[in-house]
Amino acid sequence: MTQNTDRDSLAFARQTWRTLEPYHGAVYFSPEAAGQYAELGVDARTGYFASRSAALGAAPADLVIATFYNFNPQLVRRAIPAAWEAATPQRFTAARLTGIDTTLRRILGADVSSPAIARAAELARTAAEVTVRHPQGRPLFAAHAALPWPSAPHLVLWHAQTLLREFRGDGHVAALLTAGLSGLESLVTHAATGDIDAGVLRDSRAWTPEEWGQAVQNLRERGWLDDGPHLALTEDGTRRRAEIEHTTDRLAALPYITLGPAACAELRSLVRPFSLAVAKELLPWAANRLSEEST
Image (cartoon, rainbow, N blue to C red; front, side, top):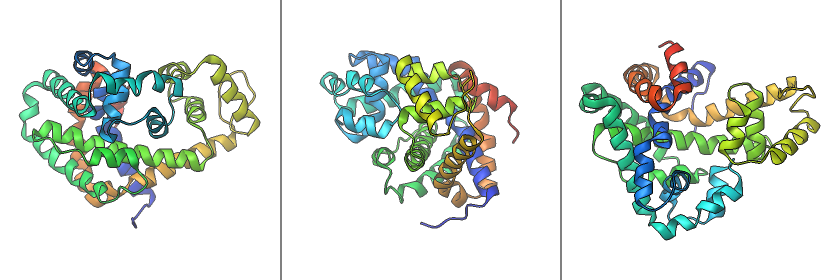
């Protein structure tokens, strides 16, 4: 697999992913999706693990721990494999799709049937179908790529972004492994960039303060973090974290480069209002970024 990965190509590829990401990410904060999981007899957290991993089949906890990477294993083990006793993977997959369908219809209204959604779905699917030809080394992506495409355009767009997101995510895990960071250490270094609150990352992945503190100490000893009172990367840590992001961008760039800069710009322009609408309700931090970004 060869590709042109110059700075400009990586920039428009990353920008396109960032603009579309809230449209996919809404499913993780969707009250309708949580309601669907409740109908299957599980809480929202268990529903998250089960519905996202269901494409793998009735996966054991260790497989979910491996592919999701940065969650406390004890948290995963509380959800998996118990979820499969509540419902089959196929039912969790259907519940996830029904949940996001209902959410998007509620938030976007008549726009789900608009020409803009249809065109965006066409472009996003074209990009996603590039990734389907390159599943090697990307297990979670490959599982989702094997799922059938939905028919409604707003769900085609969502599924396409799901594939692009999981394609990127598996590449990001590879970059973290290459850099020698565990799942917990990857969260600590992310928090140290200042992009997101450390407590949010720690608590959402169910790491204890003691586990987090030990990871901070380990990273200080390895030169990633400075010794000050606040969580901050050293100069070398900043460089190494930037290398991880560059590697992630490079490994994720192929579908966008294949689509081309003009089509990516069109896709971003089409999807931005839809991403912004769902982000304003479900992902306010992403809404702030979308409101500020230029086309």
